[in-house]
Amino acid sequence: MSAPVDMNCKGLVELVTDYLEGALPEAERASLEQHLAGCEGCSAYLEQMRVTIALTGMLTEDAIPADGREELLEVFRAWREQTSPS
Amino acid sequence: MSDRPPIRASDEDLRVVEALRAGDEPSFAMLVDRYRAPMLRVAQMYVSTRAVAEEVVQDAWVGVLRGLDAFEGRSSLRTWIFRILANTAKTRGQREARSTPFSSVWAAGDDEPAVDPDRFFPDDDPLAPRGWRSLPARWDAIPEERLLGNETLDRIREAIDALPANQREVIRLRDVLGWGSAEVCNALEISETNQRVLLHRARAKVRRALEAYLGEEGPS
Image (cartoon, one colour):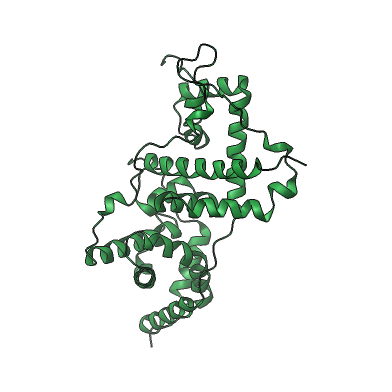
């Protein structure tokens, strides 16, 4: 086993994405969770990050102009003409 | 990284591909509506103008249709579509003889701290080295109508629009459109580590924008 990883607030904020992505090595994950359990600031930070991700998920795609759409459907129809056994 | 978990085509993907092969236009229109906007943005990362990017997207759809018979479901349909798009865009970008090499398109660049370093005590602080100097606020006390309000979402949109293009596209695919990390890596042909760095920086900036906005006026 690797030695316990020294964890501090300034370092933790840089590991939050790796943590949420499940990409942290076991020793680091354990030490991060231990730090979180005793640190009000870092728990609030992690919670803010979770809220940020959830709110970002509420955005919708920007509308894009409709004109290119019909051209693409034309492309499809032309392709269908070519490929269908006639 | 070479050991990405493979994301195979879903049953729905296979059904859509079957329908396309059979010439079903509504299935094609559905894909176009779903992916045209993100495709256009990714294409714009490789070519010079919006007009060229639109041509690239159109060429990519032609490539998708021509390649349908070869689609074996070894990746998700959208991953496959975006790979065709990226290759089409790169070929077109090469022809344009653009000055920036493609390898730099997804490069993370210099380190940038997720949080303003002034928010922490210095490394040699006797009591709390590298600890929070001012704690982040708890957002669970914020009334829902403010937290979920249109203005909050506008701030997020602005923050995302202000990001460097590669961070912006990664956070859009991951957090706006909800793609998984393996899919994004495969579609954009970037490593898991690279993707995580871009996502980390993007999310950190969106959080900072939210913190600035939500901290503007206390819960009144």
